[in-house]
Amino acid sequence: MKATGPGLFENGDALALLGLLAGHDPAGRLKVLEMILRGRTVRGLDDEAWLEGPGRIVAAVAVVAAGLAPGKAIAGQIAAAGYDPATVTATEDAALADDALAALLVVAGHDPRASHDGAWHCGWPDPGTALRARAATDELAAVLRRYQRRYDQELPLEF
Image (cartoon, rainbow, N blue to C red; front, side, top):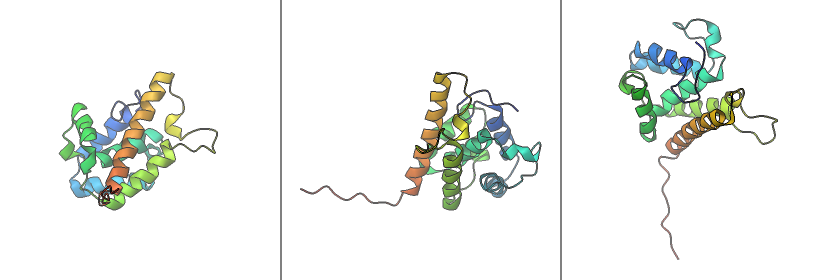
């Protein structure tokens, strides 16, 4: 399937993943997401090349983020795409969330030392679309980072 939009669930890659995950129980969904985020072959996909594109990785990261407490807005985007978030997200898993953030930083990160950003940010047809793509991945990174710091306590402000 060819990607058509920069939103988290506006492209064929994301919709194919949602369809695949909807056919699995929670343990199966967790296994599929782990395999995608860790770069392994996933049975039930059209071919092994499915894992190669950045859109596919961003879609898997979005599904993981939607299953976390700070990811309620992303779960709403899954619902807007026509899927029940409870039937496509995995159970909350801290290690999977860490893997998701690491994968996101590889495909959609910003490295000031590099000549370009991650592959997700390359090839958008116009600056407006590229900006929407950046906003989508920035939202994912924020959700995952908030989840990582869920137990941090703020110190009281004292003068």
